[in-house]
Image (cartoon, rainbow, N blue to C red):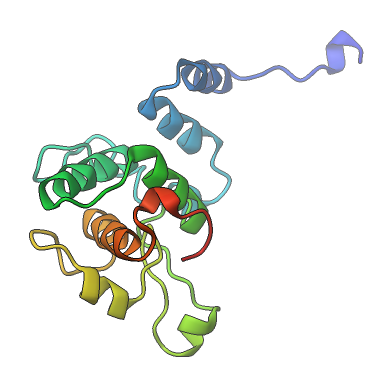
Length: 163
């Protein structure tokens, strides 16, 4: 391709790629925000990235997972950051307001909600004391889903598809 027709990367793209190479959680967030092609890919992380939760964790996906892991450790619920993150990305792409309105649960009137796509009866049955009763609350959703996965599969780390 002639030099005049070559595409040049913007500084933002180069920065995002450099951060991704660094391998930090913040870098993954930066790549997601810079490269997002739809609002749903970054919903919940763009407007709250600079704030913190009441427990002092960053109010973003990394902070929600870390806060959930701290609660899980206190309650004896197994799971790892990588297992939780992998399942969140498959289930909701990191969108805490995600809702599934098309599957059999939705057809039955109980759609899957939140980061780990939990239906209300499962959320209520596996709710962990000390977390919100709102299934869209990221920490409550993660913690209840991990509690359910621990009871059914031994750990969220053992979940590799819809559960």
